[in-house]
Length: 258
Image (cartoon, rainbow, N blue to C red):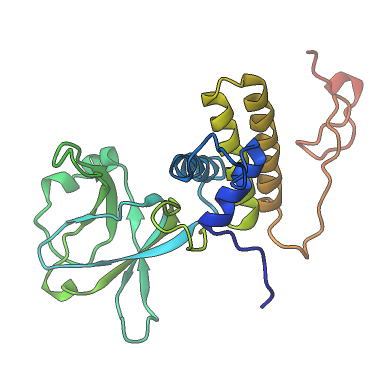
């Protein structure tokens, strides 16, 4: 329903050109489109980090195999929220949540000494193995305990989380994955990078300050769960009536000296 603003790589580059004063209609342009795509991709990445990935939520599926405990994750994975074992694929009424463990907890519980035990996965931890192939990206792996057995073979595990946005240069006609306000912020951050590389530090700092204001607006919007929930203004904290304990004003003998 509706028709919200949809950004493509093509019109995002055009907006970035206008922002930095290097429009595509000029007889001579300072930057090529290929160069600006890279700046805009860096802008997308920064917005993703500063908003904790909330704009690019997705679901990955892992197909389990008998006797296999390690599975490579997708290259674009940013942060995992939940992992569920799909016990019944037919009706999907039984999704069993797995418990996340750090590597240290995994070892402390003794699971590292019992990795041959097979059964329905109940725990998982994440680890990255660098050095296998230095010519390609090295994504994290997810490890399950117990190790999936014959009964779990071909069953699925669903991973809900956030991803990194796709590169714009891969297909500039494609709709960008970030919502419109995030793209606006990415354009501003890209403009700051462009001006920084051109040694125009004053303009770079101005764009960076504007970017920070845009991100703050996004974060403020995310803090309000629904449009129907009234905003509660937090009272000003004071020594006499502190907000943190919601008590009546402190009596003189109760007040702490600072």
